[in-house]
Image (cartoon, rainbow, N blue to C red; front, side, top):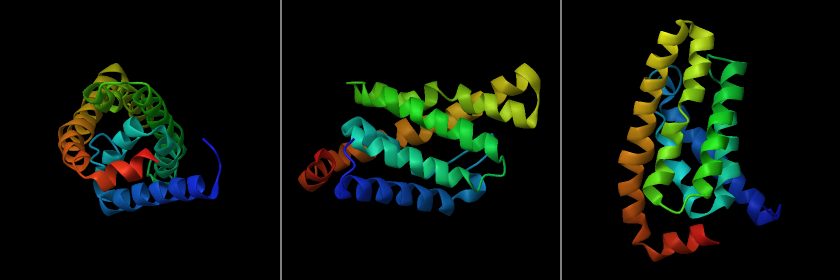
Length: 160
């Protein structure tokens, strides 16, 4: 990514939107039952990898307020960075939307470390996070982006 004024502005804007959307649902943005509507932004990285750093930055800033502390800064940001890395290298939109769900075990590991529960807790929390990622990143995001794709202005904005 080139660090031009436009690129930095785009990164900051995406990070701010992610943070704002997460803050709106902060009561369900952390822990085993997560419903971050901001995760809908993840699919932007499929269309144009230039969006990935802003999304990762948004996750980092959102996780600064996490009740899970430093764990969420590390594991949550890592989960998003890895998911988006694979998303940017995937040619199929459905598969791309599944990467955050597939890598939910990273968050499950974090939650099991912080909240305990051993292996059973890890499995339970991973499945819970997987369900929320699947709902947001695939079941909601795919139809939303399918509608947005029909708008030429949207395509122009994300392609640049």
